[in-house]
Structures are given as structure tokens and as C-alpha cells.
Image (cartoon, rainbow, N blue to C red; front, top):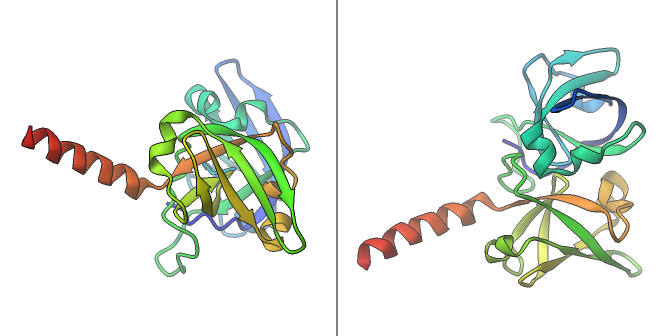
Length: 201
């Protein structure tokens, strides 16, 4: 489990195409400072398992299912990626409950800068729209954000300078693909309500 508070921007050091999978090596400092084999690290919001540790790098195996449902399918050497270690019991939950299970890939539609923040509009698949509400939570490339306006197929978020500096969202231009994870609590509520209403009928 994660909180959506990105700890650092890592750099893709190597990508090994294995046909139906790839091995992804990332250079970083913070995310591997206490990492061990088998630990979980979120990469652009996608939970990956540490399979190798090197000098300032770590490697993960990315399966076909992950490649099909995230923006990691187009990752290249030199790309910057958001990294977050799995949350520990003594850590403050600064964002919201994030599973690291990407629901879909969205697309940056527009960026509107202002003096102290930037509004970013993101398009999403229609089926995710029901989980978003104004002032609710959404994870974009692993970063926990507050929805400003939720629509059927798009939503907006306001990014403060800290977010723009420390995450990939500072340089995702219109047309860029971003990983989206909706609030898991909304999914549980939906299932409970569906079960309840089906009994009533």
C-alpha cells in the first residue's frame, strides 16, 4: 500500500525487452536507501517488486498485464519516473490510500498556468467517471491529488510548485499518457450499494 506522496524522481537506466515482458532498471537514491529484494516500490503509481539491487539502481520485472494497462509500455532509457516506497505503519498518511494498481491510462488535455499554481486537465476512460467527485482523491502517475472539477470523461487538478518540481506532472505536456488509480473506497461503496440494491429488487 502507498499514500501517493512521491518521494523522488528516478531515472530509467535500462529497459530489456523480453517479448511478453520487460525488465526495468531505475537509478535513484531515496527509494532504495532501505530496500531489499521482494520489496514494493511504486513507479508512476504502478506497484513493482524489487528483483535486483545494484549500485544506485534497482530492477523490476514488468509483466504483459502491467504493460497493457499502464504507461510503462512506452518507457525509455532516460525517462524520469515517480517513485514511492510502500508505506510503513509508523508513517503519516499524507495523501490517501493508494494500492499501486493502475485502473487506466489517461491523457493530459491542457495545462493552464497561473502565478502560484497550474491547472491540469486530464482525459480518462468513461468508466472511471463515476468514481470521481469534486474535492475527491485521484492518483495520477502515483501522485495523490485532489480533484478540482470532475466531469464524465475529464477532470482537473491544481498543482502547487512542490508537485510541479518533485513529480512527472511538472513536465507532462498535452498528449502525454498518465497512469490513473481511482479511490478504492469508492469502489467498495459501489459494490456494497450494488449488493444491497440487488437484494431489495
